[in-house]
Figure: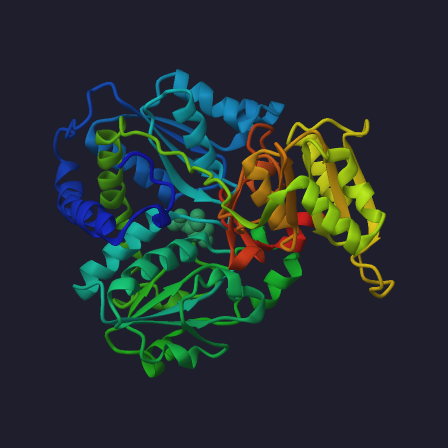
Length: 509
Ligand code: NCD
C-alpha cells in the first residue's frame, strides 16, 4: 500500500488482512513501546509531515504519537495562519515544498474535498515516492477514522459481522460516517447479517445519493436504536452547513441521556463517537462503560501506526492513474457517399445541401442535437477539441426541422465540421452532453452513421465540479474529472465524491 486516501480504494481483504490485522497487533505495541526505544521501522531520519489546514486534536496528536513510536521524525504544520497559504500560495505549491524539504509521508487534513488525492497525484507525477494519507477532507471522507472505528468494533464485539449499527447525528456532512459507510459496504458485500439504522432529522439525513445503495432503516426517533449493538454518534457539523440555521434546527435534537441509555438501549450496546462531541451524548453518561469513545480514541494510535508502516514499506509502489477508456462506437449505417447523398436528397430535398455539400470529401455532421445544444457542443469543440473556429469550418445549423412535414416545434440543431474530425474521446463527451446525438462521418468516399456508448468517465479539465469546496475549485492546477453513472443521468466527482445530475454539470459549462 502506498497512499491511504479512501476506504473505497481498497478491497475487504486489503482492509482486514493487511491493515486491521496489523492495527490489532499494534494495540500492544502502542502501549508497550511508550516505555521503550522507538521501533525504528523506518530509517532514523525518515520524516512524517503533518499538514493540517483544519482544526484537529485527536487525529493530529495520534498521528504524531504513532509516528514517534515508529521512530519517524515529525514535522507539523497546523493552522493556515502561520503559513504562506495566507499569501495565497496554492495548495499544490505548498505540497511540493514539503516534499522537496524531505517529507517521507505526508498526512493531510484539509477543508477542501479531494485535496489529499490531488496532493498524491502531484507528488506521483513529479516522481516523489511520498505516500499521502487523508486525515479528513471537508465533508468528504476520513478513512483512518473508519479503520480505528472498525478496530474498536472488532475489539469490543470480537467480530466484524452479525451486528446492527445505529447512526446518530449529522449523517450528511460527517466525513467520519461517510468513511464508516464505505467500510460497512465492504463488510456487507461479504456478510448478510449486518444491519444499518439511522436516527436523524431531515436537515442532517443522508441524501439518497450518499447511501451508496445501502439499505438503511431511518427514523426521527431514538426508539430505532433499541436493538443496536453499536451506536455511532457524530457532532452536527455546523461549519459545513451552507445555511447555519439548518444546523441549529438539529443541534441537540437527539441526545443519549442516562434515561435513554438505561431504559431504551441494549445492555451490551457500545456507544462510539469520533469526538469532539456536541449534544449527542449527555455529559452525565461520559463515564458509563457502554460509552466506549475514550477507548475508541486510543485506537487512533495503533491504527495510524499500522497505516504509516504499510505506506512507508509500500512507498515505491507504482502509481496507477485513473485511465479514461476510449468511447465505443456503434456503426448504424455505412455506404458510399454518392449513393447516400442521392437517397437523402430524394427524401429531404434541398436541405441536404446545407448538411453535406461542404463535407462531400471529408468531414462530419454531429446531428440530432436539441435546439440550443448545438452552441454548447460548438463551444466544446472549439475550446477543448482543438477544432478550427468559426471561419467556415464549423457550421452551426440551428433549429432545423427534423423532417419535412413534421410539426413546427419539432426542431433540432446540427453541427457541420468541414474537412475535420473529432478525437475519439469527444464522441463520448458529446454523448454525455446530448445522449440522442448521432455522428455522420465522411471519409474516403464512405459515409458512416454511428452512435457512441455513454462514456464511463469524463476526462479532466472540461467540466467544472459544482461543489464550491472541491479542491478543483480551489487550486489553479486541480481539474475536475468525473465517473458517469445511470446511463449519463448522474456523475460523481473523482476528487470530492459528490454526485451531480447531468443538468447541474451542464449549467456550469
Ligand atoms: C472528526 C473529524 O474531524 O472529522 N473528528 C476526528 O477526527 N476524530 C469529527 C468531527 O469533527 O465532528
